[in-house]
Structures are given as C-alpha cells and as structure tokens.
Length: 550
Image 1 (cartoon, rainbow, N blue to C red):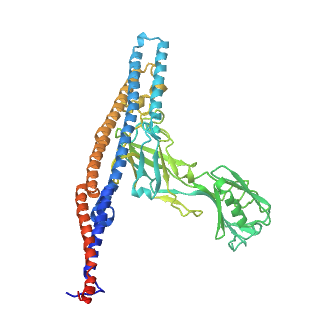
Image 2 (image 1 turned 90 degrees about the vertical axis):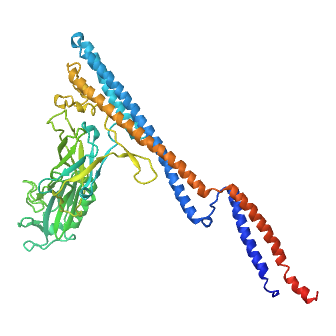
Image 3 (image 1 turned 180 degrees about the vertical axis):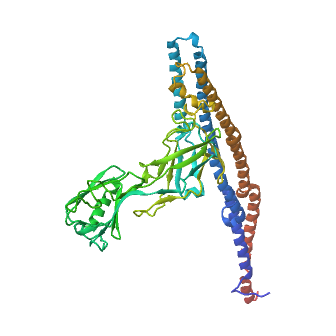
C-alpha cells in the first residue's frame, strides 16, 4: 500500500459516493414532499413525454365533455321549442276540424276560429324565429351554409341562400351548382374613352400636363379642337351622386383625372389617362351605371368626351353582363332550377340574385321565393380601366350544402357532430303536402288565404297533417342525435378521461410505499458514507505517525 498526503484516493471515492447518496436522498425527499415522481425531465424522460402527451389530451377531453354537455342542452332547447310547435299544430288541427263542420257555424263563429288560427300560425313563426341557444338561432333555418368546391373558389366569392325564401329548403348534402351562359360570362363597365392629342392630324398622344384647352380629341377619326373653354363635365355614377368638373384655360388633363378620382368613393366613377387615351369608367360592372355630359368646348357643339351635346353622348360604351343559372335539390329531392340576374346595387355589381320565385310564375311558390339565392363573383381583373371580367362555361361551379353548426365532441381535429335543423317557421312547414299549386304552400297559407272564412278547411287540414309529420320527423332526428350521438360521445369521453387519468397517475405520481423504503435506504447510506468519509480523512494522519516512529 502507498501512503501519501497530496492525494487521498479513499476520501475522494467516499466523497463521490456521499454525493450520489445526497442526490438520491434529495430526489426521494422531493417525491415524498410533493407526491410527484416526475419533477424534471431527467427523472424519466420517456415517461415525462408520455405523461405530458396524456395531460394535453386530457385537457382536450375535458373541453370536449363540456361541449357535449352544452350540446345536450342546446338540443333540449330546440326539442322544447318544437314540442310547443307540435302542440300548437295539434290545436290548429282541432280548430280546422271544428271549422269543417260548416253547416253548424255562422260567419261570426268562423271568423273567431280564423282569428285563433291566425294567432297560432303567428305563434309558430315567433317561437321558431326566436328560439336561441345563447346567440345561435336554432329553428329558423339559419344554422346552415355552403362550402365552395376547389374549382369554384377561383371564380366565385360565395353562394348564399335565404332559409326564409326557401319553403322547400335544401336537401342536406345537395350540390348547389352555378352554370355560366353558353360561351361564358363576359362583364364590362360603362365607360367613355377618347384619344387626346396635341396636334390635329398626326394625333400625337397628350400627356397629363397638357392643357385641355390646347388639345384635339379623336375617337372616330374626325378631329375636334377643344378650345372654347371654360366648360364643364358632369357625371353620375352607380352610387347616384352627381359631380361636376370645371375646365378652364389652365386646366390640364391630369387635373381632370384627379378631380374625377377625388370623388370616386361618392360617385363610383374613376378616370385615367393611358397613352393619350382619356377614359372615364364606372366602378360597377354592368350597363346603365354611368351617365355623362359635357358643355361645348369648341365654340360649337362638341364637349370633352362628348361629340354632340344635343344628340347626347355618342362616345360612351355600355357595360355588358349576363345571367347565371343555379341548380339544387329541395328537401323532397326534387331538382330545382332558377335564373339569377345581376344586382347593380351590390359591390362592384358582382352579385346575382333571383328576381322571380318558382317554378310557378306567381306566388305562392312551391320551391323558392325572392330572393332565395345570391351568387357573388370574384373580381379577377387586374383593376385597370377597360378590363373585362370573364368566367368560362366549361364547367359548373359547385358548392355543397352543409350545416354551419357543429358540436365538437373530441380532443382531436374533426371529431365533431353536425347539427342541421331545417326552418320550422310557419312559411316553411307543411310543404310536403304538395298543395302549393292550389295556394297552400305552407301552414302560413292558412292565414294568408283565410282558409276557414273561405271554406278551404280540407286543404288546410292536409297542410297541417304534413306539418305535424315534418315537426315529428325533425324531433325524432334531434332525439337520435342527442341519445345516439352527443350523449354517447359524452359517455365515451368520460370513460376515456377516467382511464387516461389513471394512466397519467401511474406515470407521474409518486409511489409512497416505494419512496418511503427508498428514503430509509438512502438515509442509512448517507449516514454510513458520512462516517466513512470521516474515517478516510484520517488516513493522512498515518503518515505523521510513521514519521514520529510510533
């Protein structure tokens, strides 16, 4: 054995073991004092990753469980309202059967029954229109929407429908397709465009700094000198606000453009000078949105952008537009077709709506009212004046009818249940009776056609029976959705949460029996290591004893 005073290997080794024992004792104390086995990633990296993943999933399950419970409450709210509607329809049928006993009722009795029937019809619409869960309307048919297919997204900004204008509704999952006119749709704006030049015959293009008073204009080849200033330009755009631009001897072409564009927000009229061509254009696609006039600027009859004020503006080009055709299936699976025409009051004139119901020529309509649908096109032009918006007729642009309301019943993406409740107002139920051609398109017809006072109780009874069946069918679907969908999902969430919590506990929680045993062991090892370190520290003293000759 070698003795030395500079390096005490036994003391260093004992100190290292004491340090290990100290760390393990601290870990055991932390686990016993906190009840948690995984204090840090170094305790058990793989278990910590798995436990954290479980914890995140548990938070999602808790939120999904709350969603499901709220979904049950929402469905019960809708069912409660439909129960009242059903009771009102039963009372309405009782009244109608009573009114059918025509020989025993005088006109005043019939009027009293009609008044009560009118009140019931109004109550059905009010209940269905006002039933909400928080801010969500449940029974007015608005809990639905359309989703554009990929090809349609390049051409259309959206396809929207009005539930109140669709007594027949839209079949769930039905494709709503829009087709363009043969040859495609081509839309332009109203515009006036004239070439301005600094010389007569050569037609040297004018610039924005040239004075209007020194120019010639030539849209047709017949030059007209514009020198008789002052004069005015007056125009009205699609927004209906009239504006006037005054041209004097010091007014440049750029001044005219700037004055017109300064009021574009109010008028819907814009202007530009491009390669000597002065163009004034409506900001709305389609015809009839721009009117323009100018007082003479040549000492005679010709004004700026105007050939002859007496004959009117002969240099204007009317905008073009077209119609769209829309197809869908109603709740009975019947294919419906309607024509949509341009609404010039919409933004840029890019929205098309049906201006007639159908398929009948006059109300009451079997399938759709005004306006049932609106289709908005995207502005695919580059925004410059004179551009044309086109849409090919090579294919139909399609959207899918689907519910816009979902109950999220899972912790992951797309784990949700669709809620799709049709319109339950008076003007939307009773449609399945198929009596629209005779005037009874819905329960609302009992009021509008005064069914009792006019002795048309038999048609009314058929509509009421159809409405009762429709309401019962909807209630059945909602009940199945609640019992077999939302409540089943809630039970599954609770079981999954229970088992996942137990799994996380096994990974994360401390085993007190095991940790108590570890504590006793680590405490003994710590005390023994401390005592041995004291003994190891005495080894250099042996060298002193050796030197003293002991």
